[in-house]
Length: 344
Image (cartoon, rainbow, N blue to C red; front, top):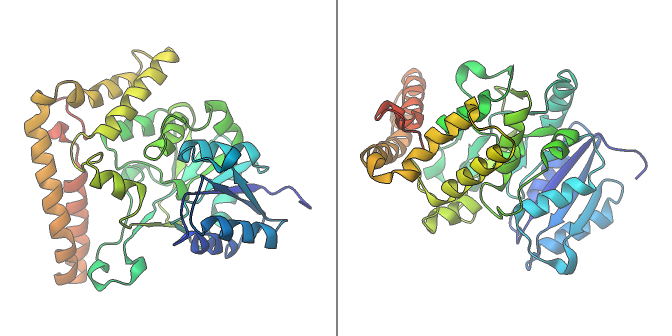
């Protein structure tokens, strides 16, 4: 390449033919130009491999194609790590192959992270993008992720506050396509945990960073997080691995991994450790927390059913009030129902 890029954008994909070109085009549409793109193929068998190779051949100064030896399928974490190892930029950004960057994402994020030398990472509020398919029934469903508590946005947050926030409320999280991180911070915490192939693999990196470094959370939306039935989370939900509103197997495995991680670093007894133990209680004592779990699940389903109907029928000022109230109702931890419980 003629010059070293400041930002390395990593797109991993597995049979992503349907959406990957739209993701790539959203990067080419960025108003900030000092980037490189690494397209990491996780063993695709559809036309996405040809699409990625075509972009790499057409733009050799900006785009590189990577794959595992023998075109293996190694999982999302291993593919993200492969991209990071080959990245040249001081900053790393991730763009999921079914998501879309808004045009000013990098132009706004890079100067912001430059101005915060103590921050290891920043992220904003992704838009849960249901309306990508122009279905009239989805027009009221788009909303922004919580990212962080309302009073903590647009500020630099010291560790482990965001870690403990995620333990209390899993809706406080960074989405991959919203993140801009320092390469040195990713290397310092050891990258992604490769035992997690398709769910929670991103959080194995992000929560390690939240645990050890200051992070800036913006009250800005920089990306569209596409919601569709073939996404990893939608597939996990169909298989019963993810149950909104109550404990579920995928998160239990993740929490146990976190416990081992904290213990290996001598963090027993810390604030983060204590919060994690509270979060694990429903998994270790399910009979004690079953009534609260059922109550939260019922509340989640009711709010999910009611929100789009209120958005459609209420006048605009009432919509804003209803949206705020329903968001708080849907995301409040069930510690309020039973002392010691945490949203799972």
